[in-house]
Amino acid sequence: MPLRRMGRPGLIGMAARTAVVAGTATAVSGSVQRHQQEKAQGQYEQQQYEAQQQQAQIDAAAQQAVSQQQAAMGVAAQQAVAAPAAGVDLVGELQKLAALQQQGILSPEEFAAAKAKLLG
Image (cartoon, rainbow, N blue to C red; front, side):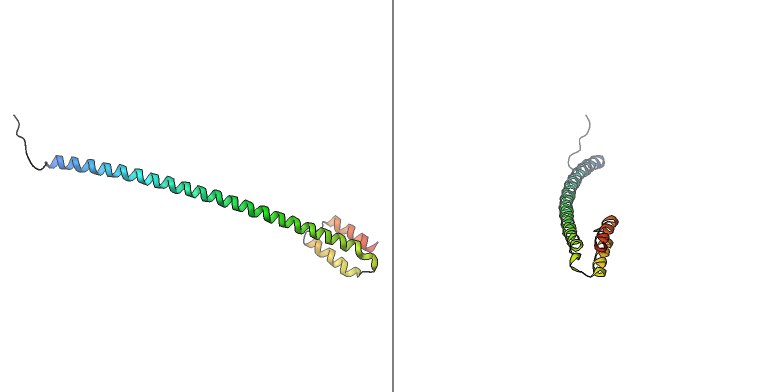
């Protein structure tokens, strides 16, 4: 019959217990860390999605404003071309048309047609 030791565990028992506690702590810590990373990734993806939606709305509003401005400038250019019958300053009108062409509102063909109307 072997002798049983009563009281504190031996060196090997203490090392085994410490290893079990440390392993359990590491496993729990890794699980918590993984969970936190997944949660942070989800929040990041949500923020990116919201930012993309806001950018799309801003882009749509800017495109609409540009098209409205181009439409207004086109009407102004047509009115400027139609008005010279009353003896308007030709040099001033040509300068206005040139400015509209430089801004990209009038194409070279539109500029040439408007200039021909003014001079003809």
